[in-house]
Image 1 (cartoon, rainbow, N blue to C red):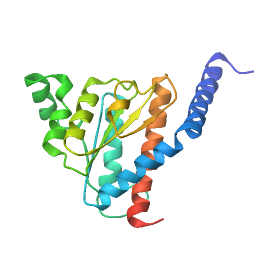
Image 2 (tube, one colour):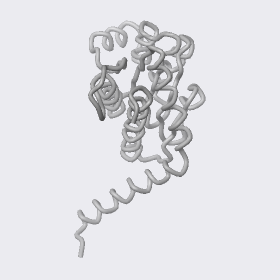
Image 3 (cartoon, rainbow, N blue to C red):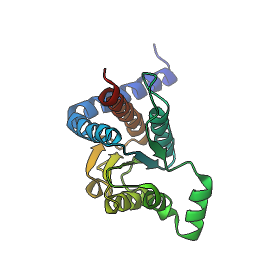
Amino acid sequence: MMNQTEQFIRQTIEDSINTKTALLQKCVHEIHEAGLELGRAIRAGGKILFCGNGGSAADAQHLAAELVGHLRRDRRALAAIALTTDTSVLTAVGNDYAFKEIFARQVQALGLPGDVFIGISTSGNSENVLAAAQTAQKQGMITIGLLGNNGGKIAPAVDHKVIVPSKDTQRIQECHILVGHIWMEMVEQELFGH
């Protein structure tokens, strides 16, 4: 007989499995299309800019590290930047302009046509991620939203979107890192083979 804590653990794992099953059923095409864009951009000499808030900021840093470092194989470093890491820029822009602009100003400074912007937001409504996506489009970048819920305000503002079919922040974040790992592996396969 399971105690209450064991039942909670079991239910949480089942919820995670169910969310990933829904992702599998609804988002494979979108994941594939966005992943192809990443491989094309890196092959053409472009870079990938990531951003998000809180846990999504951690995901942005994690995924940028997978490209600059490596995922499955020892290979050359690939161009990726997490816009969440420069505390001097973040605090200067947040203080002098607005928190909404902390990523957009960096995109304006660093983004070039053909680069890819990936905005990560579990709600799909993060104002600073939305502003960065809009700036990225003005810069001629390819824009991708890694989102949750119904995609929020960011979904219509990006070229490609993967919307995790859940309202539970933790389950969405678990799927976001799964999708991110799929994309990073797709990039390695595109550039360096299987």
